[in-house]
Image 1 (cartoon, rainbow, N blue to C red):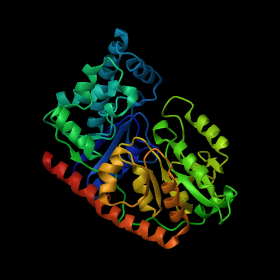
Image 2 (cartoon, rainbow, N blue to C red):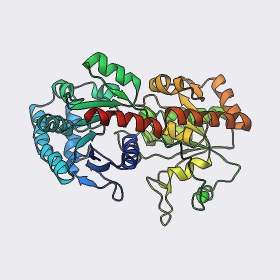
Image 3 (cartoon, rainbow, N blue to C red):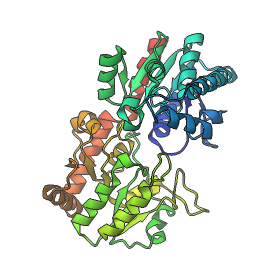
Image 4 (tube, helix red, strand yellow):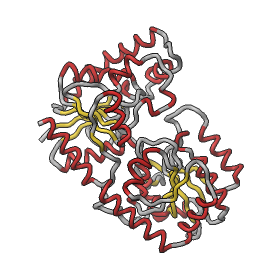
Length: 412
C-alpha cells in the first residue's frame, strides 16, 4: 500500500476543495493506503499532517503579493522577485513533508490550479520536476475561470505552474469543460472526476441535538425553511435567492443563509443584508450557529444537522467549478432551485437531475414550478427520490473509487 500526500493552501472547513479531499482520503484509506496533509491550515482533529503557515492564501504577505500581482498588467519587479523567493522557501518544506511521512505520491489540491498562492504553485512545480515524484494534480478552479485573475503580468508563472507539466504529473479535473480546455489549449490529458457523496450510505436521521435547531431559531414546524448552504461570495449570486423568496410572497418561507464571508474582499454580506431588508422577506444569516463541525456545548450545528429541516434548497450561483452543495442537496433528498451555470448544464443536468431551473431571471414560470415543488408533496418526493438514484449512479463513491484506482494504476 502507498503513502499519499495531499498538499494545498487550506485543508480545513467546508469549502469544496477541503470536502472533496476528505472524500478522496476516505476512499483511499478504505483501500488500504495511508494519507497525510500538508497545508497552510489544517483541521486539528482530521488527517495527520504538516502545517506550513506560508502555504495559506490568507497569509498576510501572500495575500499582499497576490493582490499586487493581479492589480496591474505590469506588477513591480520586487513583487515577482519575492514570489520566487518564497517559492524557494516552500520547496524545502514540501521535501520535508515527503521525507517526514515517506510520501510516495503527491496530490496537490487546487494549489496548482487557482493562483491564490503563486509561490506554492511554483514550489510544487519545481519540486515535482526535481524529485520526479509521481504527482496527481486535482484541479477545481482554473485562473481563467475567475475574472479577478485575468488582468495580470505574470503569464510566465501561470503558463508553467498553473498547471505544471511533466511526465510524472497526471491531471484530474472536476468538470468536462475544464477537461476539454486543458486538452485544446495545453495539449494536456485530464481525467474527469465529479464532486461525489457516499450515496451507498444515506444520511442518518436527525438526532436529539439536530432536532433542537428550529426551536433555537424560534421557528415552528409550520415554517418552511429555504436553505442557501454556501459561502457568502459574489459568484454565489445569493441576491437571486432573495428575489425568489420576495416574488413567491409566501409568509411560510424563511430564507436561511448558512455560510461565512471572508474568502473574498468586498462588502457582499452587508449588501445582501440590505437587499433582504429592502425585499421585506423573512431571512436569517446563521453563520453564528453553524460550524464546520457540531459543538453541542457551544450550541453550534453542522450543516448536516440543518439539511433535514429544509423544505427546499437554493443554488443560484453564476459560476461553480462543479457544485458540491448541489450534490449534497441530492444526497439529503431535498428539492433544488438552480441557476443554469455552465457546469450544471454540462455535467449535472445531463445526468438527468431534476430541478427548478432559471437563467438569470426569476420568471412567472419559475415561480409556478417552485410553488408546485413547495406544495405538491407527491411530486416533491418523486423528484428527490429520482435525484438520489441519479446521485448513486453518477456522483457516488463508486465513481470516485473507479477514477482514483485508474490513476494510481497508471503510476505503478
